[in-house]
Structure formats: C-alpha cells, structure tokens
Amino acid sequence: MSIDPVSISRSALDVEWQRLQIISQNLANENTTRVGSGGAYRPLELLSGPQGGFADMVGAHHVRDPQGVMVLGVQERADAARQVYDPGHPDADANGFVYYPAVDHAQEMAGLVKTARVYESNMTVMSLAQQMTMRALEIGKR
Image (tube, rainbow, N blue to C red; front, top):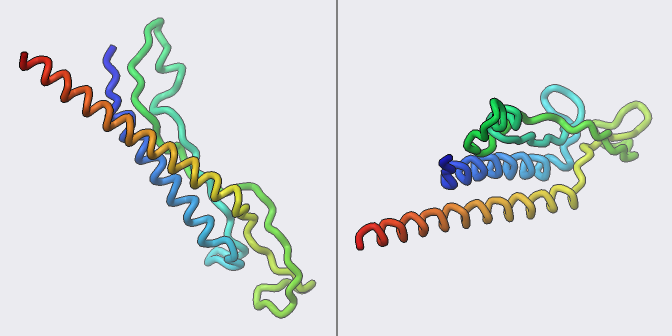
C-alpha cells in the first residue's frame, strides 16, 4: 500500500481554492437584488468528497490507496431570500418589498477561516512530505 501525501494534499488545495472562490462570490453578491436570470442572487455552496467512493476504497476485501478529494458540484442554497421594505428601490415588488440574497455574513466568514485553516494544514503536509523525502535521500547517500 502506497500513499502519496503530496497528491492527496494537492487535491485538497484545489478543492479549498474553489471553496474560497464560492465564499468570495457569496460575499461579493450579498446585496445583489437582480441577476441576469431574474430575481435575487442565490448563495452557492461547494460540495466535495473523496475521489472514488468509500465502498470502492474498501471493496473486494482489500483497502485501496486513498486518492484525495474532489469537487462533487456546486449548488444553490435553499435559503429563503430576506425581505426588506423599501418602496423606492427599483427592484421593489408591488407591495414595496425588495428581496435580497440570504447570505449570512458571519457564516461565510467562519467558512472563510475554516477554508484558510484547511488550506494551511495541507500546505504543511506537503512541506513535511518533501522534508521526509529529502531526509530519506540523505540517508540513502550514506
């Protein structure tokens, strides 16, 4: 069984970079009341999981090498839009309500911090794997 920590960490870095882009997009569109397809911006979330399935990894009575993570998709959140009474707004409905995206700023910022920590930990894994490889090469020279 051979585990490649660099490729596993690399896949995690790619996923977390994409998660960071989704969080940034949600924060940037926090007050967007109209998009090209109509209605308010809908917050997005990134779905990620292991490359291959868990059943594939432990199937046939042997454990397959882990291969990292991947993006499974991006979906709109099912959160309801928040209503604000502002009859002078150009996007107000007949009753004077404007619908804003249900972006929870605190939740997005917490996700941003979590994503940064996961990214940082995977960078550490890559660095340690490189140090271990260099140490093994030094031992091999002796």
